[in-house]
Image 1 (tube, rainbow, N blue to C red):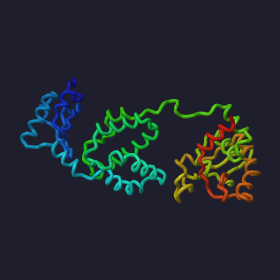
Image 2: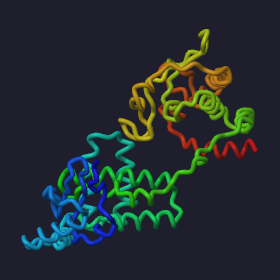
Image 3: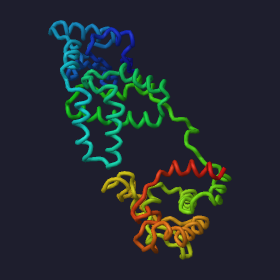
Image 4: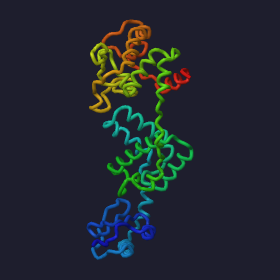
Length: 333
């Protein structure tokens, strides 16, 4: 029977000297301590079993060596690099391993959210209470839950790399602490917006909605394609006269692609490259768009390598689709 403690009681945890961590390893039946600023671990002797005995050992160990981890931690907090400085170091590093759109998001999150709140603070001074207070403030201000979670994802990635590169020395990321997790906003189960079938029918039948948008909606509603996949479709990948009309998704037009805004890049995943059958509603709408709308928009007949939904100059387009849809829903009543 293993009666070795599996957790450190809160009363003992609160009695620990500043800058000291103490936790059990039940499988080994040993206690482990680590101390600031480098948080190197030390395994306590095997005869130290009870939590109060482990606390007494830690206190005696520090006293004998005249060590004050808390004071050293406070010194490092003042003298270490700031969060703002570390953000500026981190962005060029992360740029080498993420997509342009992801990098743009990281930059935005750092400049608009992370630096204003923590930029002047030494990165070593970041702590759980500070993160919890920040998250509570955002929730009280009514910030969008999805946006906050995206920002926290950037912050977590940044902090993890800061640990890996030695800009901050801590035993574990602050973001895995249960206290921080509990303050994260929740996205409600009913948060995604799904259009009722009758709304879909009304918008597709509405003459007040431009032909191009009705064709895009017909394709989106019947296929579930991503907006960037629809933007990346070329006429050569559209087969409307086959026994089973279909299209091929081979690349996309991203908001920030390989060549900047509204440029092509590979699909989100390898499995996203696929051949997709087309619904009869989409086939009819696309035929009408290609026959009448495309030529009017661009001013010439389409070629096989042209985008299905281009800008007026024939180049790739990434319109403000959400704004279009809101306006067209209003037009359709």
